[in-house]
Image 1 (cartoon, helix red, strand yellow):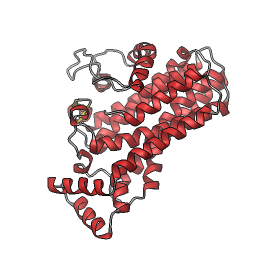
Image 2 (tube, helix red, strand yellow):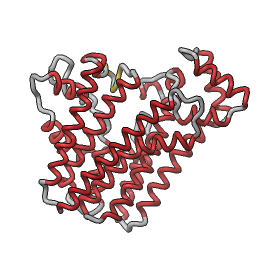
Image 3 (cartoon, helix red, strand yellow):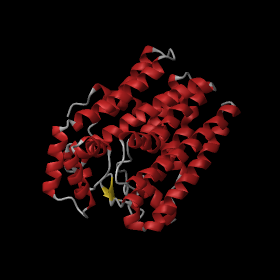
Length: 348
């Protein structure tokens, strides 16, 4: 498949920033005989379960990439934001370790999740440990050549937003047992669960570069909207993604009875009879294959996919509009536009 212009831009940014980020990440969780740290390295794709060094899929690294890009776009030396970018990626992965336990997911990035190999308690401990390492890593911001007030502001922003991220996960878990959820409630939840840390990524990169709180807050608002666009597109892929790219069958999130945006919208806009039928289908232990097909057909009838994609694009546009008012260079704006385009068109 020929990469899109947006994918090419992401690749260019990755080649520029990520080699140094990877060095920083590996220095924070070094090779050791400890199973505690070994489980973290396993999750990050650096080791097999028996401690053998490997180089596997490590994820997209989007949050640190946005942090470093925001720092440079704001006029700073992106390398000064490496400690913060490292901490952001560790916080993101701490949340994934816990999410896998809470959601009962047995695979991530094509291999067994930490809890299925090391144990549930151990996976929770590994996530907690990774969060502490992230906090320690933020001390590096204080020790770098940036203003102390900016370093403190960056640390405060990270703590504030990852607390909000955890609140979003709490809400997501609560929604599983709720009879009805509105689209507004759902969008508020993902704004916290996904949007908060992406907001922090762009806010922190900018505050490190400029020390200007208002300027950085505008970058943060852009990140919040980008986070919404990213998660909404993820919800679309969870139902209509190409199995050869996502590794999941069409309708996967329906089978899992996930209350993602397509399902929430469907429940809200279906007829009373269809709402009753959907509710009964979701109360069962498993959704049958015929029910999955019927739900997909109902979604097509109500143009749910079109709504979801437009919602992703709307948030991407909000992100671009918010940052374009800052007077950043044309090339910098094009980079943000490419990231927004990638978030709303990605296929995996």
